[in-house]
Length: 56
Image (cartoon, rainbow, N blue to C red; front, top):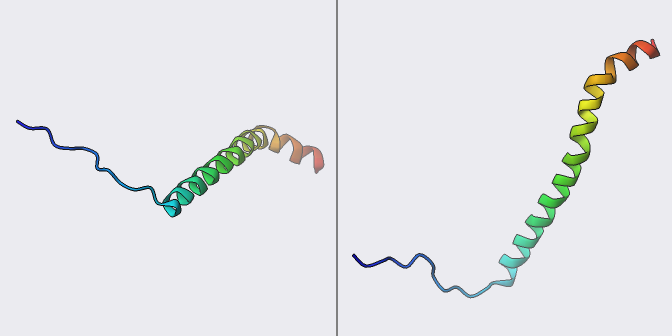
């Protein structure tokens, strides 16, 4: 049984490369935002009711 070729030779397209780099940058920035918002949300959930009682 002969093996099928899995990969094909393709020329690199600069537009495809730019889209990939932009997508990676967007993902990186999204992860930074999530790393900030998730702990802030958890802290708010834990301490929010006590803060609201203190304000009232």
